[in-house]
Image 1 (cartoon, rainbow, N blue to C red):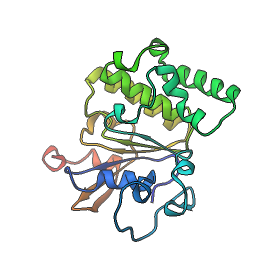
Image 2 (cartoon, helix red, strand yellow; image 1 turned 45 degrees about the vertical axis):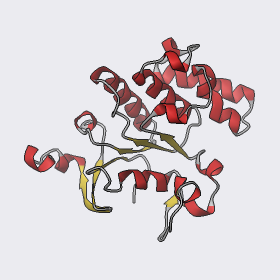
Image 3 (tube, rainbow, N blue to C red; image 1 turned 90 degrees about the vertical axis):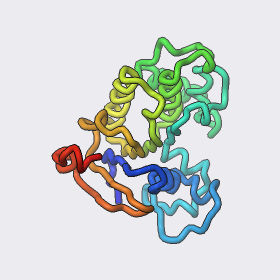
Image 4 (cartoon, rainbow, N blue to C red; image 1 turned 120 degrees about the horizontal axis):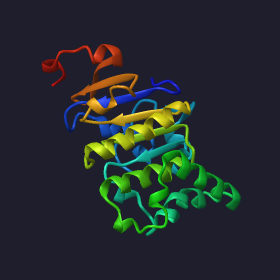
Amino acid sequence: AIQNGECVVLCGRSGCGKTTITRLINGLIPHYYEGNLSGYVSVDGAEIKNQKLSKISQHVGSVFQNPKSQFYTLLTDTEIVFACENIGMEKTDILCRFNSTVDSLHIEKLIGKSLFALSGGEKQKIACASVNALMPDVFVLDEPTSNLDIGTIRDLQEILLSWKAQGKTVIIAEHRLAWLRNIVDRILFFQDGKIAEDIEASAFWKKQPAELH
């Protein structure tokens, strides 16, 4: 169970189940990825398998490991508003959300650019912005720093802190953990497809380096 406003990190070796959990939360399982689903997955009090993906996406925003895999347009402006347009939002509301997103994420310098001309970190910022524009309650990120340098990771930290300050729920599947030290509330450590440890962040950071490895 993850509470409203919590920032939770899913960690563990590759193949341990982190990404699977993110796909259960955003509805890609069972609505896109095939398989046998048992048990109960509930987000905002509603069972995932009984909702359409189009409905789930308004409550759960997803930022994938490779931001290029979630782009639909060619320009930063149109990408940021794409999801809002896709659900039929009024034009005035879309413009309001666009301006709010650009201001809150400090991406003024990226507006009006081709997505193909952006660096990996800049693409990640636009991916975050396109999700932010929908103003979901829950944000799910799958290894968001895997292709980022230190400077861009600091920018991502600011985005997460902004979401956290707004009371959003943030769930991050990640291998690189140090950058999350002042952001995360809980760590779920996965092993062989199961949660091996559910630990408060304050206790997690007290572990010795050998144990953390």
